[in-house]
Amino acid sequence: MNEKLLLTKRNEDAAATSKEIDATKRLLRVERQFLHRLPKLGAILFQVKTYLYTLGEVKAGGMGDELAQAIDGLVNGNAPDMVRYKGAVVWREAVKAYLRNRSMA
Image 1 (cartoon, rainbow, N blue to C red):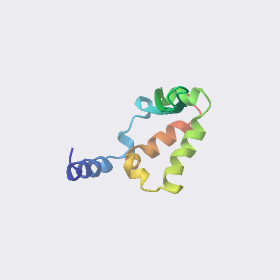
Image 2 (image 1 turned 90 degrees about the vertical axis):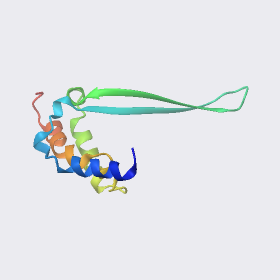
Image 3 (image 1 turned 45 degrees about the vertical axis):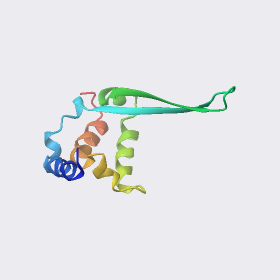
């Protein structure tokens, strides 16, 4: 996908409202990265393990507030352009409201 098309797609996505986002259908993707040195070769092996969690699982595990704070950190952190890159301009408010809601719906 070329850059112009990608930017157009992101602008169209940004036009969507948070009301259109169903947070119960959103997933959290987590990567765990490992570096291992192979003793005989001395080479370094880079390993990535990916996990997917529903936001309901995050809430049930008691981590809803922490994830909502991390989403706020996208805006307040040292890389504010990450909000646009992650598409958070579309989904962040709906997802934060869902995560901070004490009901398990």
